[in-house]
Length: 240
Ligand SMILES: *Cc1c(COP(=O)(O)O)cnc(C)c1O
Image 1: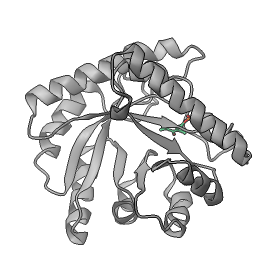
Image 2: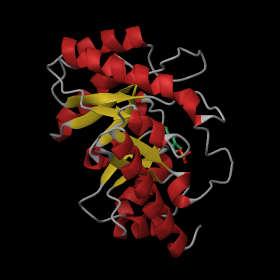
Image 3: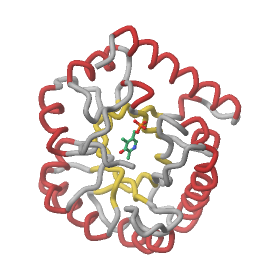
Image 4: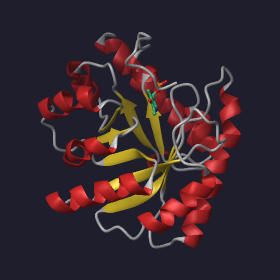
């Protein structure tokens, strides 16, 4: 675990980078939500980040997230599910998270809708897109996303607020730029063709490439290691 001073410095640095990337792109930095990805991070450190003004946290694994969420009593916090979600877990996810970034099928959206209806909640979802269509990646292809979106906008208790993508890992963050740009174009197309939903969000950009994502229109960036320090590579970190 990093020290409180390191955490303070990291958050200040990330905020500066957000501001300068937004400025470069002629955007208002207030349009960009910083989601601090807190997988493997103990709840004590999450609370420190909260005290430094972070109000959005991202978690990948339900098992790990639930005890953290329940021990975190603050009301003005949003939890974002950013890991792959199995449909048998929806009953646990819906009451505990405000955003689900990883909706990759109509079936999953329908199950979320059913459960949200049961507990009288509208849950915000993003559709996960596999822009380049690599076989081993989760997410829908662009064509699948459009077809799924047409069905998902009919649901009442899920609100499709945008799209999310995770580019193929590369040592050069510039490699992600065309992927981010494609996600924006797909979002713009959905905005035009399916205005029943707002499609306001583009969840893209991680520690190594969030400034590029901001230049390409990201409204939500998911930043872990640049805030909380390097994660030890272990089985819990299968994101890449
Ligand atoms: C782990 C993870 C992140 C954060 O990655 P960092 O490199 O720590 O910034 C963002 N998005 C997803 C989907 C992740 O799994």
